[in-house]
Image (cartoon, rainbow, N blue to C red; front, side, top):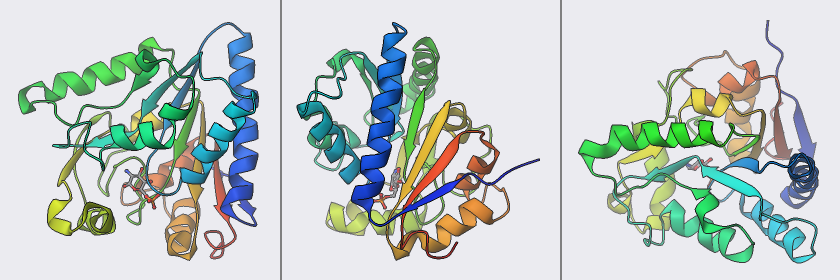
Length: 251
Ligand code: GLP
């Protein structure tokens, strides 16, 4: 028995992000009031940029503190040092962490430079750290053109955990402009698995623009299948799609 996750369609990304950010402030405040840190799963890519900008605005306005927030990022490219401008470590510092009051020890992102012989242990430790933090309260997601969440490319099982993934050619093509050419794009990444993501208590998937309309429709209304890892969200009790009018235009 499944019910499609709700899709909320907004006039534009800014309005969607204002709405979701206000909801997140409420959630973090309520969790912190119960005297525990709020655990957030964070995403990268162009999509969450206006959302992070709104979180920074709310922080500056004194409405949101990250002092009692723990974060886990979905993924990181393999072979990129944290200081590489396209690493997700750099992205997160630039777009969010450098502008808010999150304690550095509360931030978790997979290490793209982990040695091959340590990779399995690194991934297992990432899972352990999520569990030790009490699990993810709120998971932010984008969606790739292959339907991936995190870097869970087609074929990623429903119960997959944090692991090494070979990137789909479409995903690498999409990343090529920011890397300055396809040959510069890493071939592999570390990503939380579908199973890791689905254990988050609340999930918000963001998508903007007509380029995402077809895959959004497929994820929300197509068969639940490892061909489109976002389709697994249909089986999550508290996953919501936040869309602009264009991304929701095929629904
Ligand atoms: C990358 C990220 C995903 C993201 C996707 C879409 O593959 N690993 O988390 O959702 O890109 O990117 P964009 O938001 O730039 O469209």
